[in-house]
Length: 197
Image (cartoon, rainbow, N blue to C red; front, side, top):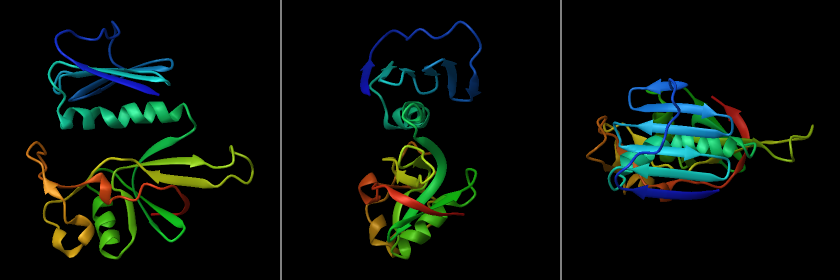
């Protein structure tokens, strides 16, 4: 899909009804194939169709704003291509992938860190794409792939124990004071799913 990001005065029109989902920092409307997002907290709005991501920000977009809308935007776009986004950590060893599922704060990032320290190839600690290879036939193979989103590890980890974490930094805007691991340290190639934890 194409993407356009603009900033300046003005707002994108949103539906004249209550949002379908309301979070403290994001309102979401589903209108058929169109997803609409609005965040007064982050000063950003988006209109997402299967082929176009259109976002507008009241100020030059901050990394935090773009990260906040990334998950719903990418989830919507990929769902129209038979790819589903899960809230999970993912890693691989050899030619098999592992998913670690759990709510926020339940240890997905800690499992990803342990995998890094044990020489696994980590694909991500928060979002993973899942799809069936071979066009969903009887012999379809579930595949997973990490999404290009920096990992965010608890700040009390010993980052110096793993060379993969050497560029991790604490970002000023992260109220949880986590260590953010650059996307370049992640393994983003697809792999067959071998196990779920």
